[in-house]
Amino acid sequence: MDKLIKRVQVGLGVAIILLVLMGCDVLRQAASPLRFFGVSGDVVERVSDGDTLVVKDSQGNKFTVRFACMDAPEIAHSNKEKASKRASDRNQFSWGTKAQARVQQLVQQAGDRVTLNITDSDRYGRKVAEVRLKNGTFVQQVLLQEGLAKVYRPYLNKCPSKDLVQQAETEAKQQQLGIWSDAKFINPWEYRSLNK
Image 1 (tube, rainbow, N blue to C red):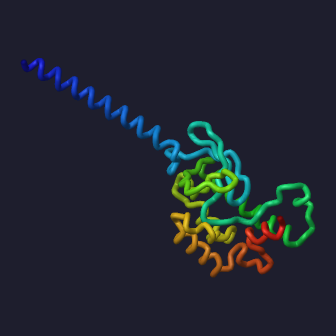
Image 2: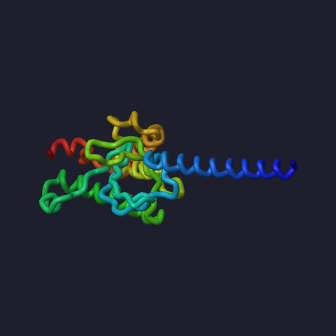
Image 3: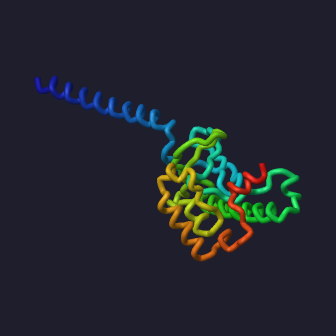
């Protein structure tokens, strides 16, 4: 009788362990498409500009990520834009290039890996996300503190770290850093509107 009870107990134990392991795998697979927090980080394939990345996730899927909470100056995309002699273009593109270079530097320091907190998708199909480096550095906060971007208020309600980004922008503005030191700088959203 004791042998039978032991066998039943061992069998039940094994069954419970298998069910738990299967349940964990089901939960992991179910959570994977949500992509709220990257486990080991997504690989950055390209820094498109000061607020956009192309990343590859752990499944090999590539997608474009637009930084949540902020807007960086524009960069020149076409040869016509690169050759422009307009002061407003040169000013915007100069700041945009600085923002892009800073993002590239941060990403490289992190081994080309970022962790995303995806908050939305935009009309272009890009994922909108808070972007952090593996050491926890919040990329948007750095750009705003250094005056290389501005808080984008129309979507601030979809920004979990809105207090951090607003404080970072306030500090840069008070210290007249980056774009805050440039009286000729045009907000990126205004620049895009003027140049449609």
